[in-house]
Image (cartoon, rainbow, N blue to C red; front, top):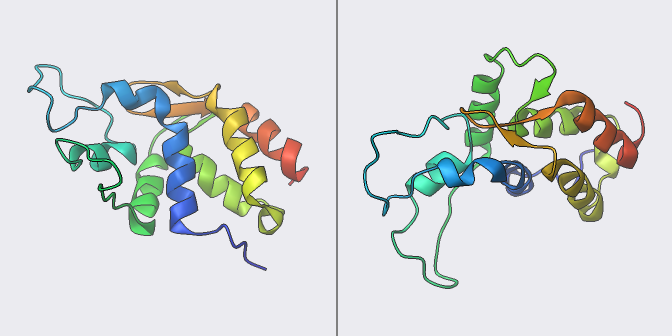
Length: 145
């Protein structure tokens, strides 16, 4: 049985929430050009911020991220050699593969995000977390795989 939370919107929300340590490193279009360009290419946040409006208006901003962006990032992330670490998009993919994923509700996803958010760090190309910390956070909500 598929989870009602297995949607591109939930995936994007999960990934973006875990990319927060790198947000200060992503240039916004209104920023002056930098001699030190961002290397944060393996993040869902990067293309979103690069196409953000130069001035935000309350309740009037459109952000476009879709399943193909998440899939492309997953493919790119799989080319990295991250011994014992996961990118946020890999974490989402692993969460979806858990046998208990179909039992997840909004509360459970929020708990997993909260448990992981303090464990994510910026490593230059994007955000990563310890794989064991991820497994513990997921198993604390869904039980062992």
